[in-house]
Image 1 (cartoon, rainbow, N blue to C red):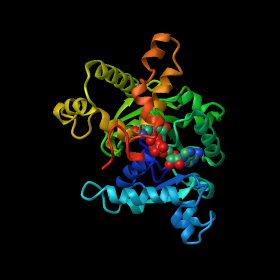
Image 2 (cartoon, helix red, strand yellow):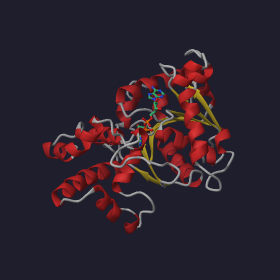
Image 3 (spheres, rainbow, N blue to C red):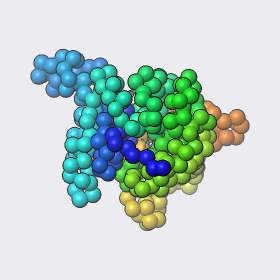
Amino acid sequence: MSITIRKAAVIGSGIMGSGIAAHLANVGIPTLLLDIVPKQLSAEEEKKGWTLDHPAVRNRLAAGAVAKLAKTNPAPLYDPAFAERITPGNLEDHLDGLADVDWIIEVIVENLDAKRSLLERVESVWKPGTIVSSNTSGISINAMAEGRSEAFRRSFMGTHFFNPPRYMKLLEIIPAAGTDPQLVQQMKQFSETVLGKGVVIAKDTPNFIANRIGTYGLFVTLQEMERGGYTVEEVDAATGPALGRPKSATFRTLDLVGLDTFLHVADNVRLNVDSESERQAFTPPASLTGLVERGWLGEKSGQGFYKKV
Ligand code: NAD
């Protein structure tokens, strides 16, 4: 039997959450997009005399993400009405809204404790039968499910979209020990037919498949680039369109992903393997950690390997 997603909710309206919400809305699924309540007023909000209780302030993060999406996803690639299908909000005022959807996707920061406490809140309003998934890049799905009820765990899995979600076809689905195997197959079929994804079912090993290979490959690239005396531009020239990759090459992709996020992702392996040689292999080189220490996080901060123009 196939599944129907009448309505969905995405929690976390950053790079990935907003992109996933846009993809769902673009295939016709009304989607609630939730983020946290800002702790400070922006200069513009202060000028307007608003306080932190003002609804526009409380919903600012998700609403801002939707406004940006509307500008960056032009027709005909996107259904012009897609943004109207996304309802932005915040988790405090709209938690109950999660009881009215068929699929909840967690897309917050890559941190196990944060994801676990969010799932605890989600379960407090969760309606049996609602699918819950995490977009983690590589944190253990089993570890995230710890402490949750058996019924909730049957409906919980990893659904790992790639950046940007509307262009990248790959979707890794990662069942945990308690996930209903039939639901995994139904999600695979739904993701292929409705979302247009190419699905790979992955094991719950650190960073699953693509990111395990990808992080390792990038660290080796950086090492060999330093040894060979190559520049970022030279490596990108040889690994971008010249290789048949339509747009982004190695370092442009990394700037898009976010260098801080990439380090968190590499840590998922480094901190969760037993052998010293594997730990070594997943230790980031100083040329990368140095950029993050300077606040050069990629496109989101205006500067990464490249300056955003
Ligand atoms: P991001 O930093 O751009 O966005 C995270 C968002 O979550 C922010 O808007 C933040 O305010 C919000 N948030 C944080 N804690 C929250 C909470 N408790 N409740 C509600 N919202 C909360 O991060 P991102 O790059 O979108 O990554 C999100 C997840 O997707 C991570 O698990 C990451 O590993 C994974 N991922 C990222 C990429 C990528 O290329 N950036 C690719 C695949 C998967």
